Length: 624
View 1 (tube, rainbow, N blue to C red):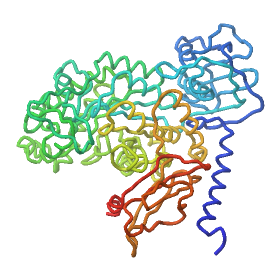
View 2: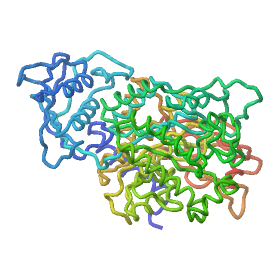
View 3: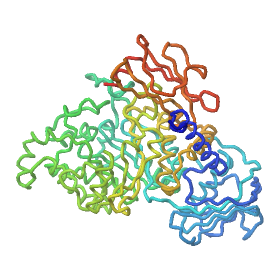
View 4: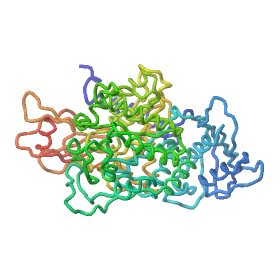
């Protein structure tokens, strides 16, 4: 056998390649997302508190943008001050409306963009060239520090995004997040050049938007009984129990947040989920369902298929309700889209509905799938009457797609491919890469949730399938569902660093993707987040454990790591492993009588991540 064919030698060779790539990347500024082009030059620029900023474009909003993002520095009205930061709106060859050109040289910094959005993104890049909090971060971000003397490397960046839709979704229904956190979330999005905030405002567990013509939606639908614990273990409400948990956003709150997002070049897409996932509205107005049955706002999902959580698609009163809601929603959100959900609508109650049977016959609807399609198409006409475009999850394909709908593909890529082949715009958000509520590391070391989506999974996301017209793929987004996310700190833990990966996938050129270089930059941004007080997951440092049952032996265990330069040490005798314990080089056959496996990762001679401990019983469950 050739020496390089030996598993351990192959690993060493791979580590050398990894180290070479990482070293080459470490000399570059730690920018996320990576810019389209970055050319290093000789020399440096020294930035101090006295460095002037001149804005050559006499537009008040541009001046305010510069002040908001570099508030540690002062604007000057001098036309060409020496050693200054110069900002201007002007055409840049080959650069689109969100692109910019940034030059750092010994004599000054020049930022040029054809549109204000490009200037904004260039300012985010400039902020990342400085240490966290220096100069003071944009409004709403903690960790402010006074500006001190800083040396910036000379460089030339010409940059623009790969996709026009770079989104993050926050579910505020399952758990309510106050206005201050929503603003903090928007600030964090803006720093990484996201431009769409998908706001999941309603679901079974809570109605979070004030609709003045339907006051019971928030009076009743915004509150449920208080519960803690794992989502699938949460108990149902007790008779007479007081629904004290929840909250909602007033229309003035929403206008304020919309303005706040617009100042950061972020468009908000509101989602009002229908025909299913709407128990909170049904609790307020029971006549919306087939059975007209009174219900309460549930604290869990145990009612699914047992209680009707769908709007009745066969009554005109349903569409009057939808029209009232969407009239006020459309007035609050100036963006072009309204998301109407359309996912996971259980249709068993429609099949039994006395009103739906003759309605389906009269409208030549052969199945309840076609009935949902009828509903979505009719809702689309309401959405379009408000001057908006309809977006729905990929279930809206079933039974026939509404004529002008945009599809958000979450059950993998298949729905997006089908919609694109029909000529519809698509936003790709497959759960395997984009669901930020999934486990992001070894489950025994993580808060309870389900599934798996590692940082490397998010970084491997490719939104454009080979088989469709690329121009129909608007972009993609990450989604944070909050059934298992009870507070703001844990929301940040679940979002970051996977949102770093998605930011780069959606902004940077596909050919520039480089996992070793990306991880170097992620670790630099971990240090930034430490200064800023942002919570984030370090799950990428933890060992990965998979198992299978071999022909002989009790259980065979495979260890791996997202970082190839990590070494894994383990024990099976209930002692604590360190770098003198057995080094993992091949699959482990668990010895007879061993009741647990313990694994620790080392990198550069020091332990990283958490000690992982998995019982033999748990290993056996994973085989099954």
